[in-house]
Every structure is written in structure tokens, then in C-alpha cells.
Amino acid sequence: MSGHSKWATTKHKKAAIDAKRGKLFAKLIKNIEIAAKMGGPDPAGNPTLYDAIQKAKKSSVPNDNIDRAVKRGGGLDGGGVDYTTIMYEVYGPSGVALLVECLTDNKNRAAMEVRTAVTRNGGTMADPGSVSRLFNRKGVVVLAKSQERPDGSTAEIDEDTVLEATLDAGAEEVNDLDETWQVISEPGDVVAVRTALQDAGVDYDSADVEFVASMDIPVADATTAAKVMRLVDVIDDLDDVQNVFSNADIPDAVLEELDT
Image (cartoon, rainbow, N blue to C red; front, side, top):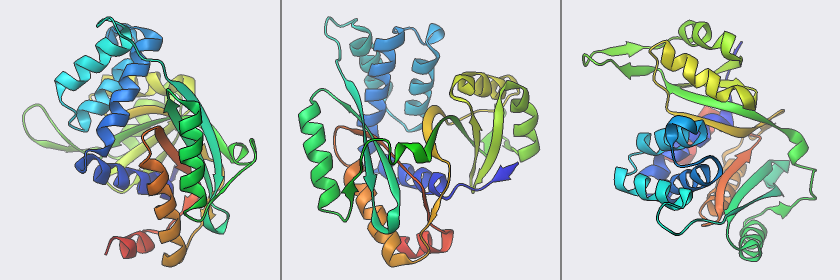
């Protein structure tokens, strides 16, 4: 049942780097605002907001920023947010597919910036449906393998523990992402899966609904991998871009080569 999603590993490592650079904060804040707007500002009655706040806290977003985002999204400060979700479909080097998810208050700006970033960095805009058909919308829960207990000791979470806690809640597969476990489910089961982990005394880092590739594209040489990662980085740096999903399968050895 356990697999290894190369892109998920890449994305997880990239998120850690982005967090250090402060890039991740704006995206996490926007997630909170949208969740509060859609489901209300009370995390107890809004699981999507609860998870958005949890993810922000795990990434060290200050509590004041989180509170302000909840108030803005929920309209508690007299303002409010008005974002539109747009998906762009892109082909990168070696036929790698990218799904680009934007949250924007200006569709024309988002479209222009994404198109410019793609065409200037070795990618091409794809026809609607040509890339999205290569992905499935899934619930994705990520948890650390090594977790600190309340008494200060460390607990190692193995695959059997994860499976035992989440199978009845809807878990479909568990992937080994080096330092973390990734639990895949149907989108509607993501809250049940992370709740099952909590009930079993296991903490989680994030619980999201994401696009997961149904088939990966191998990228075995460093030159092509560098081009793919450059394209992803440039797109991901855009203010309106919330997520970039890919079916690139970059081996660990190549990723390490790129890091040096």
C-alpha cells in the first residue's frame, strides 16, 4: 500500500525552503481568508478553516497575522475578501504537466503574469482539459514520522500506526516522503482522516484537498530537472499563484544534485 510520490517529496522540501524565505506566509494567509469567507470565522464549525490555521501555525505564521486573516475573511473587520479561483494548464520541458491554481482579485493580471512566466521559462500554455485529465482531486494529509510527546520525549510513527488509525476513515494509500507520511483519500474524507489521526494521538502537519497525478513523467537528468524546477519556481513566485501541481518524477539523486 505504501508508495513514494517524487513530486510530493519535492514539493514538501520546496515548501520548507519557501517558509524560510517568508514566501509561504502570504499563500497561507490567503487560504485562511478564503476558508473564513466560505465557511465562517469559527474554526470549531469550519474544518477547512481549522486546517488552514493548523498549516499556518506549523509554518510559524504569527498568531496576530492568523487572527487578522480570520477577521478579514469572515468580514469581522468591516472589510472582506473577494478572490476568484482559476486553474491554468501548462506543459513544461519533456512533456511534464503542471496545474497552476490561482486565487486572484484580478483575472486579467493573473492570466497575463502566468502566461508570461510560462513562455519565458520553457513552458507552453495547454488547452483546457488536456492537463487536468492527468490529475485526480484527492484529500492529502501529511504528518511527521518523528513527533514530540507532551512529556518531551520523541515518538516514531510507523506506517502500521498510520494505516491502523486511518483505514476506516477513508485512507486509500500511505506514501513515504522521507521525513513524513502522506495519506491519500477521497476529498470528502480528508477531515475524517486527520480527525482519526488526532483521535489516535498522532499530530498532523497539513490536511488539504490537492491535485495528485495519476501517472508520473520520469525526469532522470539534472539539466531537464533544473528547467522543470525553474519553471515551477517562477510560476510559484507569482502573487496570484496559490499552488503548482506537477507529474514530474525527479529521482532523489537528481534532486540532491540540484541542491549542490
